[in-house]
Length: 384
Image 1: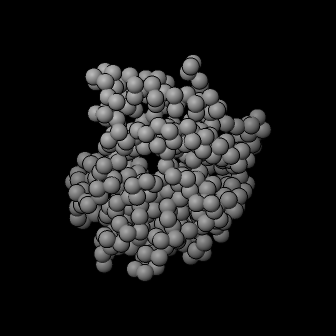
Image 2: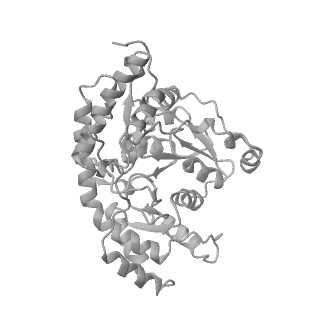
Image 3: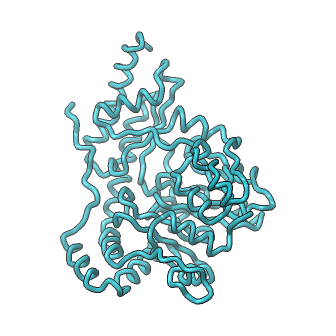
């Protein structure tokens, strides 16, 4: 079987986008495109407010600063995520605390969160990993019970839906990223959604250097907003294709015992499908490791990578600057056995645009998984 194109052109755009960009370039100090983008993005997320900003990292930091969370406070997050999630907490001056993840969804769980809550805990940062909604219902119950904030890191979850409502409508606020690999992109950029008028006002005050606020110029440009508006028009059709391909590939993987897709989301939920995770089951590979398997898939032209390593392994979390900034140290030896196992032995994901390819690409991925197993088995002396 010939190798199909699994390197989909990204981003997609329409020719009319050029006119919008030129118009925005001639009115750089205006807010025509930003205002329209914020209106439509709030609507997409079933939220009252959307605030455009420079990137997803800044979005989290602005939320924390707007909630007056800082030095001496703790924010709980999963260790299985991109480092920006924890960077924003550190930049705000708060102390990150790790809670374990679900073995099948890789999202943070309410039970693990509750086990690490202390008197210093001020917020939970729930990462919608790969675009899959966390169990926001259970996390909301924990947050309400302990009087702390629930914040959503929805960097990978543009157009995600939980229980029939946009993912950006849950918790006190949600952050989004429009970095170049994301499902909605302007090269860089970010947004915050919230239903809280007070938080909306405080964050806008910081971004506009309003009197009484410590200001920061982390705004989105008019040109970026024009690009994002063009991208919003393409989201519904792209999401439809991503979902169709993901379901098809998951079905193709079902008969293969040593790999599997994540379980489907609930009926009223929508997985944004930024990433398609392939779980690699080392116990059924006859001595072949996850890393060997993914490397062999890559050689066959399948854009499969091993994903995140635990944040608590990053040396930067224990350097003098971080300790000095926070006034204490981060616990980098947490009790997170699920994260520890899946990050080193199981998790892998396809490139963000893989689900925008054609049907034959999905068939090739499944066929390559079988071929890789056979080839690696022979090289190791013939596993069953």
